[in-house]
Length: 122
Ligand SMILES: [Zn+2]
Image (tube, rainbow, N blue to C red; front, side, top):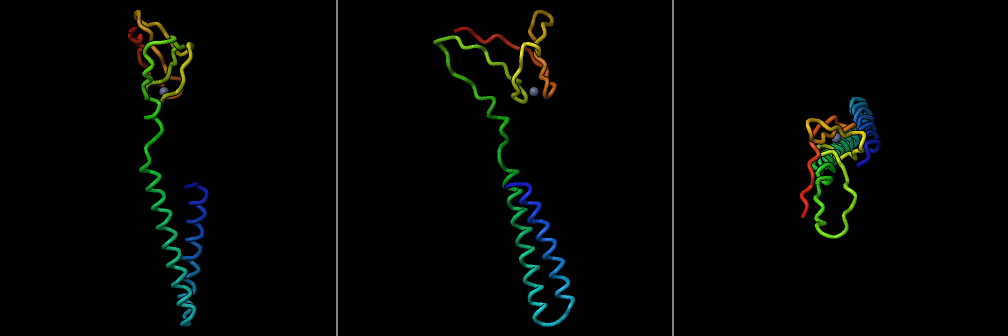
């Protein structure tokens, strides 16, 4: 859910809670009922926001999707796509260094360093 909507609901909930408390403190029978209803609605709002936040947190992050292995064995040899192995950010030749005969890549986004291995030729 939208963070702005969540914040808005929390603010509305707090407002209702305070208003409800004032109504209850005010004392007359009908205002106590209205105040009680306001507090209940506020509690419902808080519960709704809390639940939606939990659902949001349970969602898998998109990071894992960048690790999808392309299974295009034979056929035309496509230009090798270089991606960071830890965050999936695209890498350019500027991020590559030749160290001890091996090609090392440094991710400009997350700082991960790893060896670019040659893909096996079928
Ligand atoms: Zn990275």
